[in-house]
Amino acid sequence: MSDPLAGVRVLDLTEDLGELGPRYLADLGAEVIRVEPPGGGRSRTLEPNVDGHSLRYLTRNAGKQAIELDLATQRQQFLALAATADIVVEPGPAGPLAQAGITVPDLHAANPALVVVSVSGFGATGPYRDWAGSEQVYLAMAGVLSRSGLPGLPPLIPPGSLASESTALQVAWAALAAYLRRLRTGAGDHADVSAYEATAQVLDPGYGIGGSATGGQPAAHGPRGRPDARHLYPIIRCRDGWVRVCVLSARQWAGMFRWLGEPARLADPALASIAERHARAAVLLAAY
Image 1: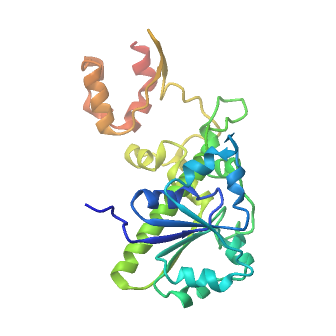
Image 2: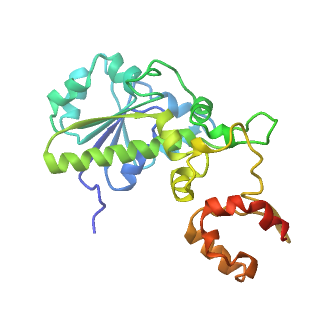
Image 3: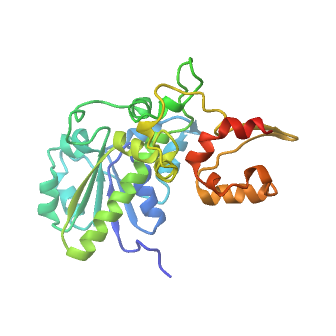
């Protein structure tokens, strides 16, 4: 069987933010061509660096091809390349296309069936559209830091690049959704992805978007500030180290219940609800 996106051509102009999204499309079989300025993109120099190679660049761009184009002087060459593509992923209002004076209507004039995905910190519209963002800003504004760290102490920045990676997932999803519509209608499209909105969508502060929904308790209805929620996902000492128990869905609870040997004190079917377990957490822990 061929890969799902075999025969699909993607042009990728991203730098850091959203850069992993086209890599997912490459993993699905798409031909992803990374378009970089003369001398290479700035993400090639991101730390950590090993033997002159950025590990972040390599992991986010595996499976892609790379070419260099000076969009300011090679505008027509890029538009000719866009005419052969199915999807273009680009860094939004302040990106290299905008700097070269190439608009989404220009791309659609060259290729009416083209799917364009623009990714930026706060999107092309709305009150924050001109703001600059960062990993920490997206996490803070999306509410993630309201649950990160201990009460009374500054919030802890999560490890890795959770906001950027959440954005990349939304970039790939938006590209696939728009491309599916293009297959059905023949018409191109333009998707606008905001890193701030993507972070809030994927990392819903309480328990993830699915956890809040299945728990029946939207994050917005939770306690203000940073509550002491250590008992909800306890860290327990074991013979060979530590383990943290994080159970969200009813299916996960059922598996944990069986693994514990189905103790009578946890046999109430109502405990399959995350909201009910949280409500009884203090009582349940006291039993141990």
